[in-house]
Image (cartoon, rainbow, N blue to C red; front, side, top):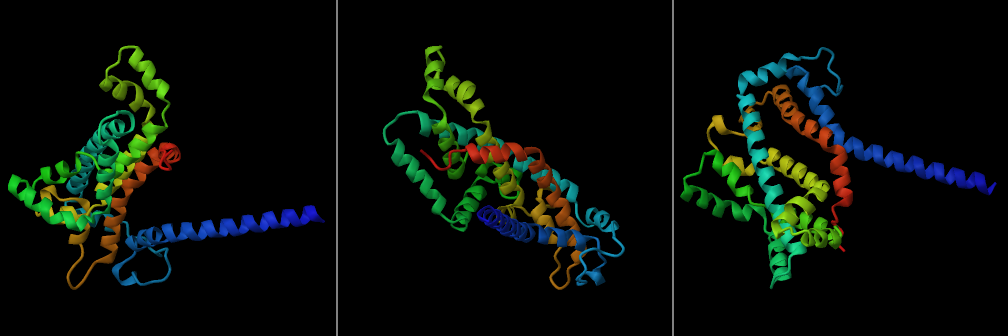
Length: 280
């Protein structure tokens, strides 16, 4: 009897857990599925509660490229995201290594001060950054999209520092005994072991730059260097919006993110588990 009750309780807990997970998954996937269905409907059927259109309008995806230079925008955004991601990975890992493994006066105070910048809202820094970009003559140029985010971030530095702290000291000591310099210890010994954290930082940075809207809105006016988020906004009319067209464009913009995550999923999950965000 007790065994049956224990089995029943475990079964009930499992059902409740799976029901909760399904509800969470639906909250995350529901809007995406609705947008996919809406992109295949006609404009008059957009309010139809049935998510599956009776006659899918695949031509809507072709109309997106007729209305916008979306191909150019996708290439622009990929270039910006790739450059910023490379810079973030390099400089954040370099700073994280310095804060985690090197000993110098004021290290902890400097790190805490740098970490405190996470508390500063993005909107506070937009105007000073815009003034700086204007002084450099970079407004409405690709440099304004690449350079400000190139040299690392407080979160990325924190992430890499925490991971480097989890690596055994014996790796560094053995490299020094073999005659490695500080740079060689970082580049040849510790950084290859930090690939999980590097993957997490790269994926998060790529997604952040790809989805960024405020900074491109402030910096860019020309379609030739515009990003995909600006393209989506330009499809919204002041008085009327073609919602199937907008949803089709949104699906096209979402597709590269899904591809990146599909290829990086295992490494990303492993990096989250091993990144040392809990500290030690």
